[in-house]
Length: 271
Image 1 (cartoon, rainbow, N blue to C red):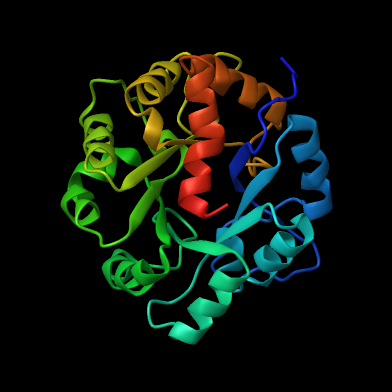
Image 2 (cartoon, rainbow, N blue to C red):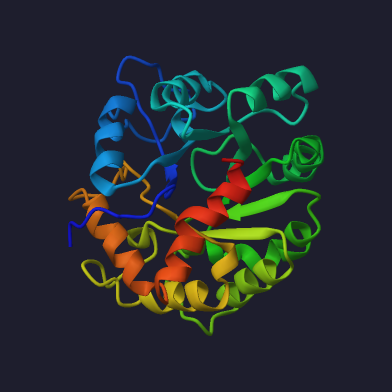
């Protein structure tokens, strides 16, 4: 399955970079692996990708320096998602925008430092910059927050196929809520990290594959792909090449693959 992708401008929309010498925040829930940007650059080359989005790890809380340095190391084909307080000054937001930041991460699971109460104020602050809220939560909670998310004044990106922590099907209310948010016109979903949801496991992730197939076929224009490198806390470490091949096999043809890997990220992240 280790076949490099041959689509110019293809993007990996979610990776993390960790430096073993950088101190973790008190809110960190695990010790991450050493996963520096040059190591990911080799992965990106092996995958045949040219663009990447570096997402701030929860373990560094509001200290975005590692993410920003990784973006610089990975070059002009890199964008970033940071974690900032909702009252961050406009000048600081502009400075982050100028170096390629395009979103603010909200982790609503263990280790997150921004609460639900900060989501709407943050969305209002970042909307003028064309940024998005990058949201990770248990997808089963989407119906509870759907009204709030539907009315955000900025774009919304939902991680990891919704990251349903527990059994899920294409007929579940959480998945229906995800699809309604996408249909509302300002939300995207990452077809990434099936191991975060799957109980069946690799190589087929047979319980999650129908969700990805449905999203890729019915909501092609709102799907993204990501590796989630370096796959923190997943043992054994999965192959990013195999995960890309698995996702491509769930997409309905070459046009959909190009839309999901190239066109959608270019629009969302401003490549």
